[in-house]
Every structure is written in structure tokens, then in C-alpha cells.
View 1: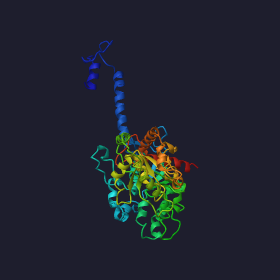
View 2: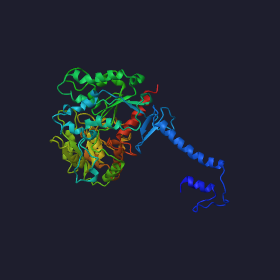
View 3: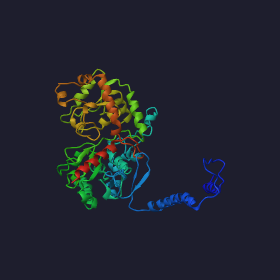
View 4: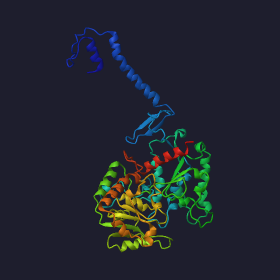
Length: 483
């Protein structure tokens, strides 16, 4: 029954038959005072709704964020107290850089493609930088829509696309606790690493810091609250001379650049570089895909004690890879070796993941540099990493890996291995079955924090590698700018 009919009947002394007016005499009339009291809250309610629509929908100066769990847009005025604004202290402002520093770099993708690449970098740009999708392995649901042939150098594109969906973005830089610089430093350098002089390699970096220095956001903290991401190791941006034969650029040696924090796949010795995980092949679109993969790994049969995917580095002074390969091949079937000197043998994600999923331990010696993408591929496979240098992980990924490295890995001194003081077989056979299970479980638990979720989707409750990096950078910048 409509409200006005109900009230009319009630006031006229004709209550509806469906309503029992307990302990009430039959009403002969309704006073004007009573009807006013009854109608006033209803009228006031509709007035407030109209006021809210007219005022808050059009007011300027409001900031917004997308809630992680709902994806809805919530509006807040520019100044709110901490209990009301969940983004307080987490706002990030993204510089609107000229396209020559990012979009133009990848627009002509053939310029960043090398002849030794498995396929054109243009294909690596597919799926928001994740690369071509992987659709093999018996069409298992585990491999559908979340596994990609990801190129490690695409981290800059992947991270930028994730930043565009960050919960607490703001267009008001005065509110920002940090400022992101979406400069594709590694991809830009890749265009000029071979066959170009040092001036060409350094040009865009020089132009970038000059552009930043003119901005009010820079002047506020001299760039101490700025950060950027690189898909190359930090050493590539610290060339020490201007000889053409020397490697890399000198971007990170500019005085202005030294104030910026660089997130990179491998740090050097600079206090302003912080390591984040290499991108893996797994980019989950939701929490369930992560949990499903973890459960799958817990049930895996691992017939090999250890494995190694790599090649000898005979020209590299001090390399222990030859010794590792020799011990692996002499291990009486305890070790499974994948020779990466064979064309594309280790470029196939399915081959590599199958190798690691069948092994208890995965050997991770240094390669061209101290760190390897293979470290994160092995963790993703539930395979316990074995390191031979502390700089391969322990001193690198402090925001993403546990401080107590004995919980998830084994360390073998490269010096002891080289002089024959220890062998890989002896060391790993000393780890009991119970210890193996406990370490493997720790490795599997690390998986959510070392993968980058699909930029086109949203994880609900899981903090992935991107989330942990943002948490870390906000804490770091808070310390750097507290004075």
C-alpha cells in the first residue's frame, strides 16, 4: 500500500485490514501536528539527497581513489583527517612526461629489437607489456590467461601500466607523498647500446633531468621524493668514462639523477638504487589463480635433487659455472641440466618451468651480473634456490625476500666449491626431507610477492611485487624527506 494512502486511512480512523493497531483506540482524526511530524523526516531526506547530488557531483578540488577490493570510485575533499582518508600518506603523483621519454621509445619497437632476440620486441609489448600468452601444456586451466612469454626488459612498461591503476593516484601534486617518473630508461638505452657514441646514449637522460628540474614538484624536495623503474641493472647507467667502448650510459651519475630513487632488477653500490624482482612468466588476474598455482606446486613430484639451466662462461673471469655443470653431469642422475648454449633452449617458458618443477633445488650462480631472472623462475616453480654469492639475492631484494635467507634458500661458497672444499651433492644431500618440505613451503609462500599481477586486472587481497615495491618506496621517501 502506498504511504499516502496508509496515512490517510490511519488519520481517518480506517486502518487497513492487514495491520493490527495493538492497544490503540480507533482513531477519529489526525492532528495537523502529528501529520507534520510524520511527513517532515521524509521531505528532509529527499532534500538531502538532492543537495548531495547537486553539490558533491560538481564540486572541484576533490581527489579520488579506486578501492582495491571493490574497484569503486570514492570521493574525498582535498583535506580530510587520517581516519577518513585511507590514502593519506599514500598518494602518488605521476609526471606527465613528453612522449619522447616513454611512448615514442616503444612506438618504433623494431629499434629496441636485437638480432639475437627470440622474437621482435613488438610482440613483447602485447598484453600491456606482458608479451604473447602461453597456451600450451595440455590446455590446463592453470596456464590459461595468466601466463605470458614476458621479456625482462618490459618491466618498465608493466610497472607504468600498473601505476596507472594505482589506488591512490592524485592530480594534485601537493597531496602526493611520492612522485613517479614514467621514463623508459632501459628501453631507451637499448636503442643506442650498440654502434652509437656515448653522447647519443646520454642524451635523453640529460634532457629528462633538465625537464624535471623546471617543475615545481622537483623544487619542493630537490627530487628526493621522485622514483622511477628500470628493467636493466643499475650498473648499465653508471658508465665511468666517455670512451665509446665503455658500456652503458651515465644517467645515474648526473647530480639531479642521484636524488631520484631507481627501482631496478639489480642494484650496485649506490644508496639510491633499490632492487625489485625480475618479471616472471606468471601474471595473475585474480587471487584464485595465485592460490590455485600454489596448491598445484605442493603436489608436484620432484624426481631430481637439483637442476641447473645455463651455459659455461669460459671468457668470464672467476665464473664457477663450468664447475657447477661438471658436478651436475657427474651427479649420477641427481641433477638435471639444461644447456642454454643451445639455440632457444632456455627461452621456452614451458621447458624452463618443467625443469624447475621437477627439482627440489635450483642452482643460481652469477651470470653476466650477480643476479638472474632464473632465481624468480625457480621460486615461481616451488624450487629451493641455491646461491653462490650473497649479492645474487640476499643483499638485493630486501623488500621482497625474507631477511633470514636460511628459511627459503641454501648458500654454498663459490670459493669453497672452486677449491674442492665442498661439493654440491654433499651439501644438498645433508638437507633432511623435513627441512626440504619446510623450505619448499616458504618458497611457495613467497610467490605472491615476487610476481607482477596483470595490469588489466586487480588482485583483491594479495600484495604482489608491485604492491610491495610501492609500500617500500613510500616508507623510504618518508624517511628521506622528513626533514
